[in-house]
Structures are given as C-alpha cells and as structure tokens.
Image (cartoon, rainbow, N blue to C red; front, top):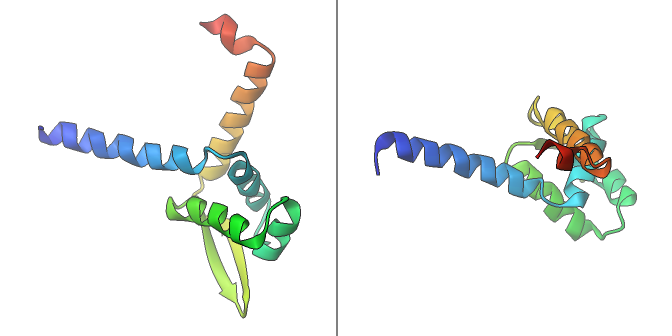
Length: 109
C-alpha cells in the first residue's frame, strides 16, 4: 500500500469511528442535550430511559472520539462539547432526517 493510500485509509477510519459513535439514537439525543450546555451525568440519566451504566457507556462512546469531554467535581461528572463541529454534525443529521421524512431525498436520486 502506498503512503497516500495509507493516509487516506486512516482518514476514513477516523471518520468511521465518529460515525459509529453517532450511530445510536440515545447518543444523538445526549449530544444534543450537551450541546445546549454542560450537563451532569445524573441529569442526563434522568432524561433517558436507561440505567446509569448504560448512559455512561453511551457517553464514553462519544468521549472516545472527542465529541464530548468531561470534568469531575467531587463525585459528580459533567460533560460538555469537545469539538466545535459536534453540533454542526447533529444539525446536519437532523436536516437530512427531515428531508428524508418529507420524501425530498428520494426525489434527489
């Protein structure tokens, strides 16, 4: 494999990891909530119908790709946006979902 192919492969692998982190509805919801402002994990848990360990796993998936970051204050963990592009991605997905629901994506093919 040539160097340019390796760097291209790495680029798409990174994009794939981010897309995978975004590939669950709960993660998209959590990211939207965090985009509105820093949130405590206890607050986020109250917003989704899941136990703390499940919410933590979803948050870890987003954190591992840099979409969110955390900080601890005592026993509490707070999350905030880690990338200035995170909200742009969720907005793009929301816009595309709206287009799909309206049947506009099918007409563009």
